Image 1: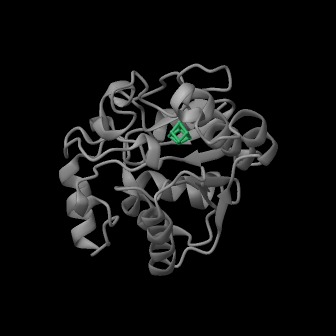
Image 2: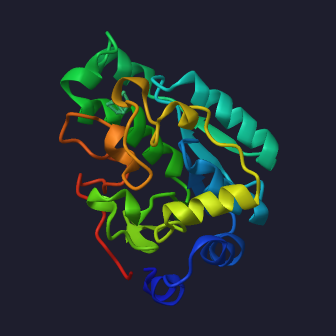
Image 3: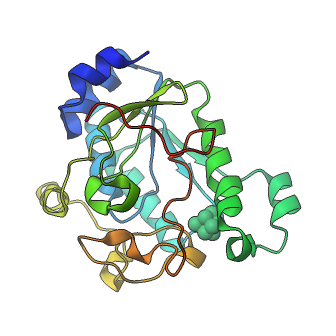
Amino acid sequence: MYEHLIKHLSFFDGIDILEPLMKRHFKDRIALVSSFGAESAVLLHMAAQIDRDIPVIFLDTQKLFWETIAYRSKLVDLLGLTNIRIMKPDADNVRLLDADGELHKTDPDMCCNIRKTQPLQEALSGYDAWISGRKRYHGGGRTNIPALEEADGRLKIEPLARFTPADLKAYMEHYDLPPHPLVAEGYHSIGCVPCTVKGGSTDNPRAGRWAGKSKEECGIHWTLNGQPVRLAAK
Ligand code: SF4
């Protein structure tokens, strides 16, 4: 459905790929998903330059660091974002599947499913495109992510796919963007409290996520069939 856009816009990065998609092709039909994590300020700043009213979906798993919630408020004020959509897990699902809050220990995929994937699918209904902040240098299944791909009938946009740590650092410094408070404490990638430890490095930031487990992703980047999204034009 989106072959034409993929073919003609996949070579652009950052605000250059965001602007035509947000302003022209998907106006009022596009949302941005942000964890308000260690590198989130860059993408949020780019989107805010184009449209401060863009819906920004934030998945509150109810397992997050309080510093992330505080950082979200700080960035929202700083960037003037007006349309934050805070998604929480379905209460019945939590009661049924994770009554003691320990599901992340026994079945982290199911925990991510009810706390992240399902709320995201609900939040994205009604949108034809969404923006994510993954980068290739994060490695693993992200090594070859395309800037644009079609997944589950929507266009998925990765404006930072080809950004390097140096690119991000330069952008943060140029626009004087505040870092997530936990970065100074040694966290390079920041998710839920039980599944995030200090560690990793600038080049391998996700080493602190699900440390000691084979799990690398929460699942929000898989299709509804439970498969990794297929690769499209690079
Ligand atoms: S990252 Fe951990 S605590 Fe958060 S939803 Fe996934 S398994 Fe649960």
